[in-house]
Image 1 (cartoon, rainbow, N blue to C red):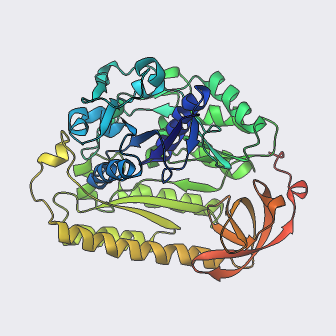
Image 2 (image 1 turned 180 degrees about the vertical axis):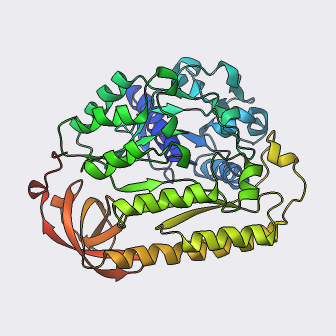
Image 3 (image 1 turned 90 degrees about the vertical axis):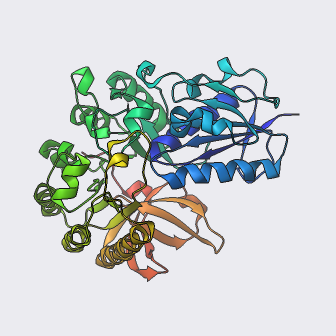
Length: 442
């Protein structure tokens, strides 16, 4: 009987692309990939270590999987596995721990998925992670939008971040290989391809090229598709990248730009590479091209030394900023980071209060942005049916849109008119089918 494997991803879009590639290894070796809640012979977790919550969730999910099948072979990989493999081995039921380099060679390391009394650890030191781990969406997942990993690692030294410790120095995929794999994804029928990495804006630095040059090549590829950049540091979002985004219809008019704090004092403590003034001017510049551009912002609350005044400075800064949503993170101490040794810790209750205030602000920002869309025409990539006879998708500027279910619209970019907002989602009326939208024009 064909053995089953269930995959679960914690963390960023980069992790999703890597999980899909790991899943492809299982498919190529005769396994069936099933949903995580189903019975499986193997459960694999691709983990994150950005926050303490991600690590706690990993431990809970391992126990949940073993309730589905106490005899299942459990594999944990990713950043948590890279940084603290011994800790993971202490979780009852974990059979193998693989580092960030080893997860791409799983079947050369494990040839017997039978439970053992002791866990096996396959983790190389981070300073030996020199190869670029190729990853993109595969048949192992059911997404209509594909993730393509083009960059990994980070040379920045932000005081709160463990990513350089878990993934090593910045490295990039060869541009010719990116183009080749991008064409492969287009030919497979993906209509949106999301370029992912730890620090995507740093793409190509070590290869004598850059993200702008890569995007010029990708947008020149014929086909019915669009490109979304997952996240980009504000100091790396250049004028030429902005010009390309707003002059080429294949580029999504959506940016996700980490801020972390609106207080200059806290930004210095974090070792970020910009000022609040620089960031504000960048957002204004983006909106000068089009105020319909979707702009997401990462922000951290409760960083050591963040006074009430620092937090209110951040809150007021974000309140006045013309953006469309926030991703709010509560600061948690990460081992072996400079911030973990800083004094003036903020108590947990206060961190949660600040987080809640910014989440409410985020919802207001999103609703205000969605209201601006009413009466406008957006091009939406529709995905799957929900339980009430409707289907949903995202527009180029990352607005979620709902419409009446039509199987012919699945995985198609369709022009819709936004008529209103229901339960926090825009309602769209279909105007044109895919044949009337020319995404081939630059």
